[in-house]
Length: 251
Image (cartoon, rainbow, N blue to C red):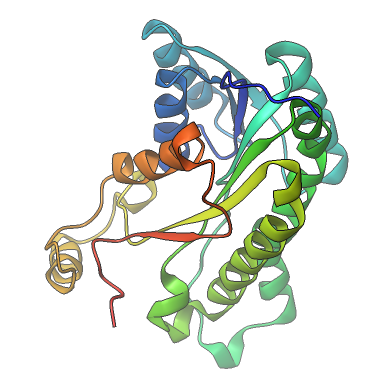
């Protein structure tokens, strides 16, 4: 088994906007060749790639439904052909997050969340594993959420799926550690991005008032945590859940 210290190719899902776009830009700035993966919003994905290249980084956009097995296999093959073997995987893609009375939640509602936070991560991990094994190691970071600690009844399906996602992180960390592959979760609090453009100022202020650091998070806060976990400095960190929420869920 050989070990390669160069950053290599990094796959970031859901990277055409929001946290994914910021993470992609940060990893590119750190020397990774970044696959900006998107399901919709080709123009936005191309804009992210253009920004990265303008700053001297390397990136390409890739369209794929990361909940589909065939699409994921094709995605990783395409990334490998164009950017090289995958060394880093950031599982960030998400779908709608509706609020629902638990009494009205259906099994299909649960499946919709599990598709993004259990099925998709599993497909992606399995697809990049051969590249990481060939390199003698790799980094997998899942973008979770602190919602698992906030006990929000109207987010029960989302919360259950996010809890399952972190359980995958722990299981994979134990299974893949002997091969030099680390697996961690970054769990943000409320980090306002494009999808929260309609949030009322008073709601943001009320949330910030509950946070010990007295502010909402910034996407760069999350990107910095991801950048650390995929760096050589975090080579001995695995199976962890790093909360990036200003201490909001402290006991």
